[in-house]
Length: 80
Image 1 (cartoon, rainbow, N blue to C red):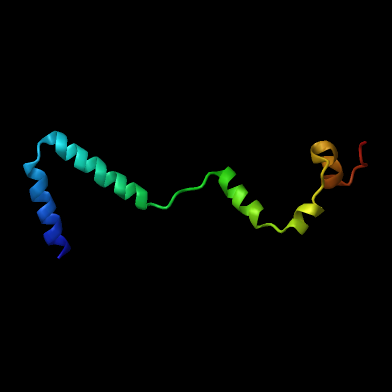
Image 2: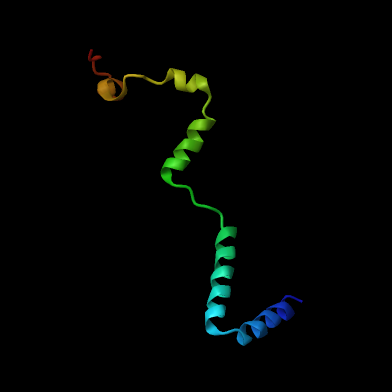
């Protein structure tokens, strides 16, 4: 049955002027594109991950940003 449908569409397409065929092709491509799963950017992925993290985890993270990176990585003294 799908080949009959494809054949019917192909026959109708051949009757149309080229400009109309181009419009139909663009429409079909847009439908095909809308069916594809969307790829998330790195920022979107990080946002999804951060939303999954419980508040208790966020509360345990350091709040001083890069000021004491050496302390957290290498055990260096805290800068104030």
